[in-house]
Length: 286
Length: 103
Image 1: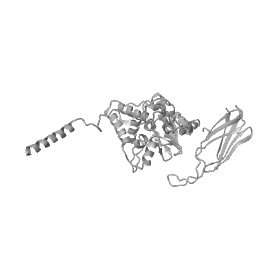
Image 2: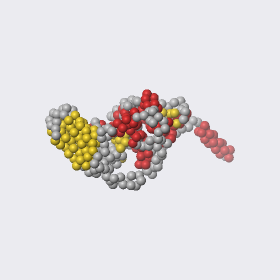
Image 3: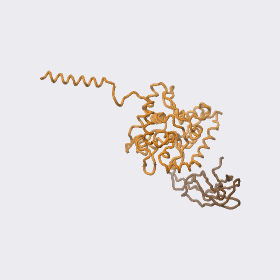
Image 4: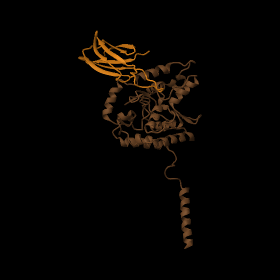
């Protein structure tokens, strides 16, 4: 009898050993961004079979016919126009040392929005366009701009405008740190936080097209393609940083600092899964 | 400095449709800045659209109008290629004016 008990517990122990030795089934799969992006895209095209893939970049306007008509009218006289013009002037203006933004970017900074964020292998981190712009300023002895609005929004508006229609082309280089940054961004995107206990995905994956109070939620795919945006609610322009920090405070979480590692990573993840969708920024949102 | 007024006027033959966007803070005087001090009221008081020596649209605005206001209206008449003059004056005495060709 005793021997029998011993042998069963022995068998159990063996089973436990076997289970732990086997490759873990769910949760810790090897990261596969290519498969992720395909699954991500399929989720949205299955959920909204009537919406054309490239239309997802128009956010809530792709979800609701009525809003779509209003938006078309608005686009004839877009509210981001003043900011765009200011951005164009600022971009062309030289720094005190005689250099300009064009000297900091490939192709003079024209038509390159779709390549950001990039993974910088020297730094080992994700570099967003906003970050690159401020680094360009600092390298040339100018004070950095606020990441959330005004000048930064105007500059990114102009850079997005020159890249309109070009598909997002975010690359994950063969570097363990790049994959880690992507995974970290993905984790951030799906993690619940704040008093309301929402993740980014609660609204933008589970409920796009539904209303949250008066607003129609935008789908996560293509959500960054329209950045920066003129938000009527803000009464002005806002950058990706502004969108992230505001989202976090709206779910009653504590926003991180703009361009903190987590935000850079989540921008990397979100941009990567929207690869192939055209840049439509600057945008206008209710 | 670039004009604060964007205007587009299109003639359909009988009528002319006008759309305009004006860049202005339109501060109500009720909002505080981050330091807790009131931002003084600053808003457009009068907006006019003049065609052929006559006002075709005049608005007396107050602080309730939104920032960067947008206006759309149409009036009878108006020929392609003619001038449409737009002008605004705000409560601080600042003003701007622009002339657009009717398309």
